[in-house]
Length: 371
Image (cartoon, one colour):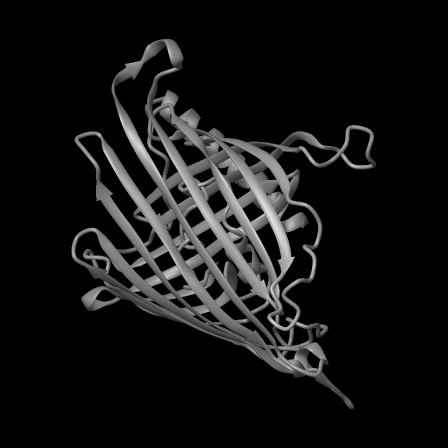
C-alpha cells in the first residue's frame, strides 16, 4: 500500500508540474516518451436504503468517495504505448491499470501488465460511461468469482476501426494485485493454476454488435494430502444496440447471458454449483437545443433502466434499476437511480417455498467529473 501511496503522491506532483509549466508557457520535457496524456476522475456517491431503520445499528444514508483517479498514458514510439492508473476509493489507494502494449501490423497487439480481461461487455465499459450508476449484479458476480475485471497477465488480440475484434488473455486469475510468482503463500485464487479468457466482438450492420466471452479459471490447490483444486468456467454471449433516435437524441441498449459452473471439487461439495445470469440495460439520451446557463451549463439529460437476474443453486435474485441523469458538458454527469432487489427460491421440486426476505429499495446518486 505504501508503494501505491507514493505513486499517487508522484502523480499529484506531476499534475503540479504540468500546471506550472502551462502557466509559464514552457513545455514539459518528456525523457522517454514521444507524448504523454494526463487524465483524472472524481466521483462522489450518496446511498440511501429505505429498509434500514434510523435507530438500527448501521447507517441508512450518507456520502462516500466512489473514485478518485489519475491516469498517465504515454506513447514511447509509433508502435509502443503504456498506461498507468491509480485510484483512491474511501481513502484507500490502489493500483488499477499498469500496462504496456506492442502494436503490430493488421491492427494486432500484444498487451502486458494489469488491466481488464476480455469478459462481459458491461465490464469493459469505463466507469465514467456506465448506463446506470453502478455495474449490474451480473458484473459483480463475475468479479467476485474472479472471472472478469482486472487481472495480471498477457493478452493477444485485434481491434479494428469497424469494431471487429478478438482477444485471448492468459493471467493469474487472482484479481488486482494477485501476485503469483514463486514463493507466494497459496489461497483459493493465488495458486499454480491460471485463468484463460477470450472474447470476440462482431458488428452486425452499423447499429448492432454481438459478442461472446469465454473464461476458465483454475482455482483451489493441492497441498500435501489436501486437494480442493478445480475450475470455475463461464460462457457469456452479449449484445449492444446503438442508434440515433432523432437529431439530438440516441438510444443505447446492452445485455447478455452468462452460463457457468463452479466445480464440486473446489467447493468440497457433492455437486457443482451451476449459475445462470442475465442483464439488459438501456438508456435514452436527449441533447438540449441550447445550453442552460442558469443550470450550470446543463446541455443534455437521459433516462435509463435495467433488469438483472442471477440464478445460483435455485436461488434467484432479481434487481430492477432506473432513473434520470443530467449532463453539464461532456465530462460532468449527475445520476440518480432507484434500485429494487428481491431474492427468492426457484426450485421446481418445491415451487411453493417462501421468498427469502422482503424486497430492498435503495436510492443511489452519483456525480462524475472527468478532467
